[in-house]
Length: 194
Image (spheres, rainbow, N blue to C red):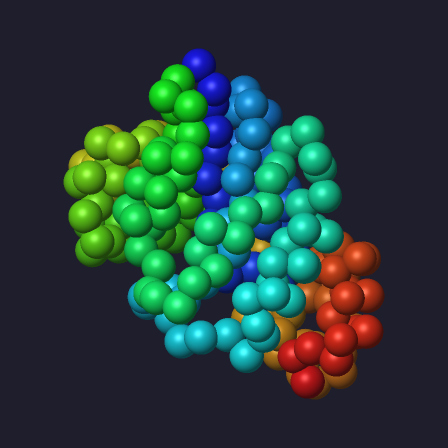
């Protein structure tokens, strides 16, 4: 059995919180590899000001652990990308003995029932939600309702939104220090988020 994680997100930009979470889940679940999937056009968010190509390159720099991660451009297309469609496409491209684990943040649990074909997602793969210690109990109700595995994970309290705001303001605070060095250099060299 090949145990493969699926970790998607805008990665706009990717930060150490994303990387640490993916590493933790990979180690905890003994995954053979984890696919890092920058979103193409997400159905629930407005498009990023940064191109897919730039977010893809930043993800490759951030998740530069070749034996653990593989950054995929599967969602680099001109349509809205739904998780169920990506999972089906990955399954069609993978060996039959591949078992998929969809990794989501604990904050997504409350809205999981609103995802397109969420019941089919649960049939197609195992869903794993990473929860911070302070809200683990309140999320347990959602995880039990949907049959989602809830794991305690070290979560760094930083967000891409905060980082983008700090970059736009030319600040050098905690948010900026949460960027992997090579990602920060890429952003600086390309003049992103100004």
